[in-house]
Amino acid sequence: MTVRFAILGAGRIGQVHAGAIASVPGATLVAVADPMEAAANHIRDTFGAEVRSIDAIEGANDIDAVVICTPTDTHADLIERFVTAGKAVFCEKPVDLSLARVKACLKHVEAAKGTLMVGFQRRFDPDFNALKAEIDRGRIGPVEMVTLTSRDPGPPPVDYIKRSGGIFRDMTIHDFDVARWLLGEEVSHVMAAASNLVDPEIGQAGDFDSANVILTTASGKQCTITNTRRASYGYDQRIEVHGASGSVSAENTHTARIEIADANGYHRPPLLNFFMSRYTAAYAAEIAAFVDCVSNATTPPTTGHDGMMALALADAALLSVAEGRRVALSELI
Image (cartoon, rainbow, N blue to C red; front, side, top):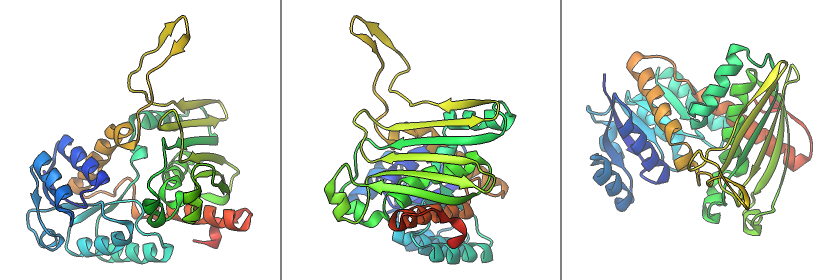
């Protein structure tokens, strides 16, 4: 079966997903919709898709699935609309910035017996998958502590910050999903600290640019997350998992896997510069997993529930910063 796709939203992440669809056997990109004509035409010219309206895509018989890459405040409405139309839906995170709206959307998907996968591409990264496989094999024994480092090379524009939902819902949300995946059990408590060290305009917009979070499960497992919007040396993405019998780690990805030694010391090529290049393989593997679940009518590997739980952790972190205390997830879910 070939899954026929349409992309809703032709911005930066829409272009990433267009490339992923083009690289996956069993997937073909049929159409793209975006009110920005130049962005839609770029995907049309690069990948051969037709430019159509969202209304036309909704009623199209030659579209099996849509990838939602539109602004966050449109996600839930589009999910409901397209599962009702009988299309499988892949939606970029988050489903919405409101937990109540997410819950209502997931109920709609369930009632429509729809397929919804939420985009958490880090679970599909080859190195992170290899790390998880060693945990599942028991190589390090039961997981006890997880350390996630996620540092962007620079902050996004302040206009984006204002509509992003904040660092916890926009950036740390990926780490919250990875934490749940690696800990193997749900988080019970969240403690967070956040400040503005990078750009005062981010603080003036009501957000933070530097944050640390400690997640704890009911059994006592812990995950420490460190985030910043500024890493002068590149896109810093690392994981270390400590278990009862050892540890396993995934290091940063460089532009080339070489090391140079000379009279001035040891040198390595720079880190990949941002998520579009760092996670190219992950985005393709993510779409391949979605194609598989659509073709075989199976449950997506990252579900609406995963999206809801990551958002709940983000809300708990924000509440922890606001009130200076440890927050129980049961206060929100």
